[in-house]
Image (cartoon, rainbow, N blue to C red; front, side, top):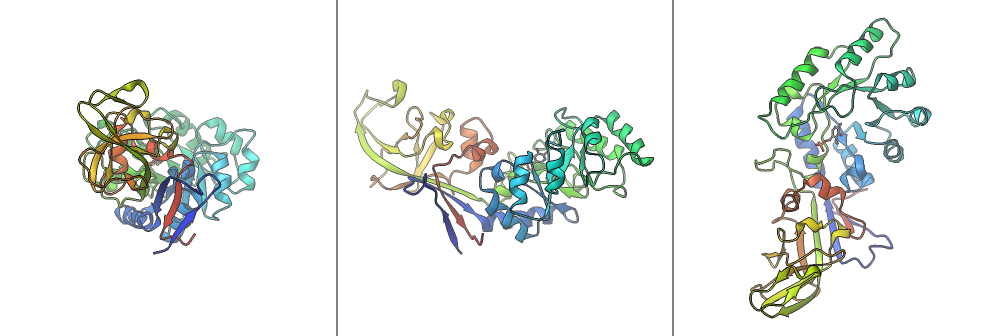
Length: 365
Ligand SMILES: *Cc1c(COP(=O)(O)O)cnc(C)c1O
């Protein structure tokens, strides 16, 4: 197992370490590809591969067999084009200003409106995004039927992919899944004319009827649980630890941190740890989260500062400055920590911040 440390001027003497396990990432890709076979398994690497590093993640997925990538914006597409020659789709689609840049970089826009289809017409391969009920991006059913007439009579160029997105894929019992599936099936019942893609991470686990010709997971690749409220079938990819800077005793009645929101009910030991909201450790984690020190849970005490948190280590033996605290790891998953903050792991990952030393495990990047 090779580990590569990514150092910048900002992380040379870092007090926190973010390890990204590329072997687990590859294993997750293989697992999702298996689950959705014989459909193609593409990968969503928007937002710097969910904060984990576009280059390392893309190289790993390429090696694992991934042939198609999705990003959100043109700039992300251009950055990705410098890393891979594989197929790249851009969810945001084209504008008059960006049309040529797409074509020059061989990026495939995901066209979301009739106007975008007209703008792009015959500049190269592109996908159509069909809105089946999320009402966010995409062609309406009416727009799509209008374009289908154009495709049939040769005035509109055929898309290389038709995609749609599920609003409630993480709730298997939600009726909207079935409605969206039906709409998607009805509009182009056979794959003969163009391949179709409906499912992201969670949709893959709704069953084979949701797979069509291509699936496009993001979150599950990075170790997040695509099956909410059930055991996570994915391998953890992210590990985050931070250093203890100081240990102190507080007397009964004394407070800890901004706003004096934590008041000690007795004599307690407090450790101050070098991570804060500037590192993605949200202020919403005050009062709900914990870290792991020497294998024992230590609850957060008081407010989260920009660079620091305080945790209650009363009863944990032998803790000293320089020791590591697990922030995300074998005890606290990304989903656990996000839950504590009242958010989802997606937001947590993409907010991790630039101050962590990044270590890529299993890397040949
Ligand atoms: C982000 C995104 C995905 C990936 O979703 P995950 O839940 O992370 O798997 C797929 N399709 C679209 C349109 C997206 O915006």
